[in-house]
Length: 146
Image (cartoon, rainbow, N blue to C red; front, side, top):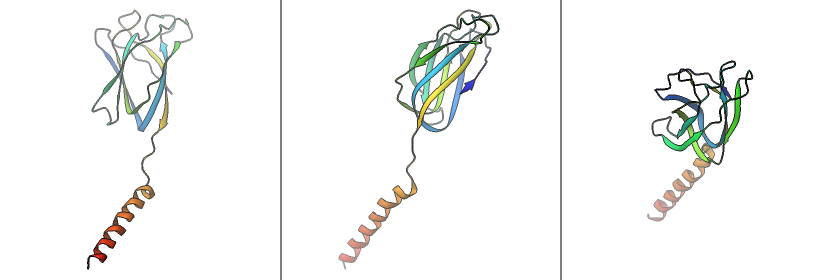
């Protein structure tokens, strides 16, 4: 879970990067929009979600979404909005915010929660078995050819 507050001019795109500790299967994302105090017109609106499995070098768009405006005055967030059925591998996620819900001086995002499943890396024992079988096969061929 990540709590995030961001201010940026609406004329420029706001980019937020999330770097995951390893590659995960991303199943869905939950977003709570934000505002400041009693100003509810500062949350993100249109967001492109991009993912990568090489640390952000090659990005793949997962599409544009619109996030619900935060209307819970004084509580700090709105939503949540659920982005489901992603089923994409990722070690890097980028939010490219292209618009907000009003005040051009602020873009605010309250909380993002990623639902993931770790992708297991091949273990040494798993790789060692086929390697030893190959060496044994080579040894048999050489022994039979004499």
